[in-house]
Every structure is written in structure tokens, then in C-alpha cells.
Length: 191
Length: 175
Image (cartoon, rainbow over all chains, first blue to last red):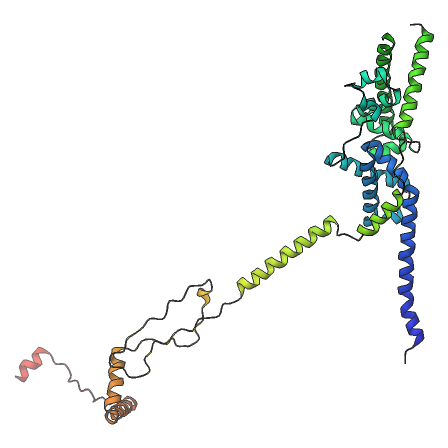
């Protein structure tokens, strides 16, 4: 005859383990729902292509799920942004990316460079092309600074440079952009 | 350009720049991103061996192969039975056939013969003795018994008698 008390004692650890796994899964799903759009914006700032950005988002979450250490992290957003940033950099270096689509408005024009495009186009698209033309060490902090969620300290932690260096680079980037825009506006006015 | 104009220009540039940068990363993913992420994690999220784990696995396999090969190499090879060249029957003209050429192996230095003493070909004297036994067994038996008997008998030697030496004077006187 089966001893029911023993059977129950034997079943309890298995049931508890199943509950733990289910709870952990639920926590992970909640994190994905909470942070995936933020992660998307981070990687999009670097990759500038929605398809590549979505790939990078999926791979980021896949990586941290496999690593298994996501459950114990202190600052979820900082951790995710660092992993996502590295993932986007790897994707950028590998060159295995979809081509960056041009803005249709700009692409339809026969302007060969950003300066000429600026003479007849809206400024937003032109500025975005000017930002894309910046060297990476200036473009990356500037692109991250456009995210509402990120300040200089977080950008510095993510890229792995000093906060002061981030501020200096942001100033230099903005200075270069303003110079170029000023030259374009002058030429536009002369027409 | 006056100071006011310059400041106005600077402000205009700042506004254009801020507006453009605000739009720079203001892109939303396609609807259902969260579900696609979750689906992919569920599909591929099984624990995969880490890079270190894969290296450890490869090294372990390599070590196991090396050990297996070493053990196989060190174990003694089965010895090839040497053909016995001794003629068992009485052959008036037995021929000695050398043992078949045995391929030398790395274990040849530690080769231990199964039969000791190692069989050697019959000498001419032995062959003659065997022929005698075959032809005249009684005589041969007698001869062997006599030989055995004589070998066990104590050797008798006659007593040696030596005359004392004499000088030449004594010899002359005696003469």
C-alpha cells in the first residue's frame, strides 16, 4: 500500500521547482514587455535600420536569457543597454546588416551630398544625414543623447568612457553640426 | 552681422538642431516586438554550452582519444606461434626449416618464448644415435646402460710408485 504522506513529501519539491521555473519565466516576460522598446531605441541609435535593430533586440534578450544572470541584476535598464549596445556594435562590425534605407524624400532628390540636399529639403532629414556622417566617437554619444531616457552618466557607462569625455564629445558634435548647418543656410539664402 | 543677428542665428541653429536630434532616434518598432522576442527566446533559449564549456568538451574528447590510443599501443601483441622445426619422426635426411619470418614488432625486445628451452635443430650425432635406436634397439639399450653404468662406477687408479732419485756418484758406484 502506498504511503500517501511519503508520496506527498516526494511530490512537493518537484511542484515547488515547477513553480519557481514558471515564476522566473513570468519575470523574464515582464522584463521583455517593460524594456524591449527602450532596447530597440538604443540599438537603433547605432544601427539606424529597424530590421537590424529588431534583430539586435531579439539577440540581446536571447543572450541574457541563456546567460541566466538577468534575474540578479541591480540596474535592469543599465544592464540591458550595455548588452544591447555591445550587440549592436558587433552587428555593425560584422557588416552583416541590411542596407540603411535613405529617407524617401531625400533619396528622390538628385542631391549628391548633404549640403546640396539641405538647400532644398527639410532640415530634420538633413541634420540626420549630417549626424550619420559624423565620426563614430562623436556620433555614438550624440545618438544616445537623443534618447530621452539617457543622460551623460548612463551614456558614459554604456560606452565605457568618462562622463566628462561624453560631454566634450557632445559639445564637439553639436559644434560641427551647427557649423555645417550655418554654411548651408548661408548658401540657401544666397539662392 | 550685428550681435543681435548673430544671436538670432545661433538660436535658430540650436532650434533646428534640437528638433532634428529629437527625431533622430524617435522610431518605434513594428507592433508585436515583445511577442516576437518572447517567441524567439522560447524557441532558441535552451541552455547552450558556453564557449568555455565547448572548449572543455573538445579538450576532454581529445584527451580520451589520446589515452585510448596510448593504451592500445602499450598492450602486448599476441605472439605468433613459432613452427617447431624438429623432426618428430626419424628421417634419414631431415631438413632444417628455419622458422617463418616473423615481422618484427616494437615488442620484439621483450619477446618471451612460450617453450623453454628453445627447440634447436638435431645435430649430426643425435641423428646417428636416433638411427641406431631405430635399427638395433637392443644393442642401443645395452650400449646406453653400459655407458650409464660406467659413468656411475668409481674411477680406480693404480697406485703410482716412484723410485727415489739417485746421484750420478751412486749410479757409478752401483755400476
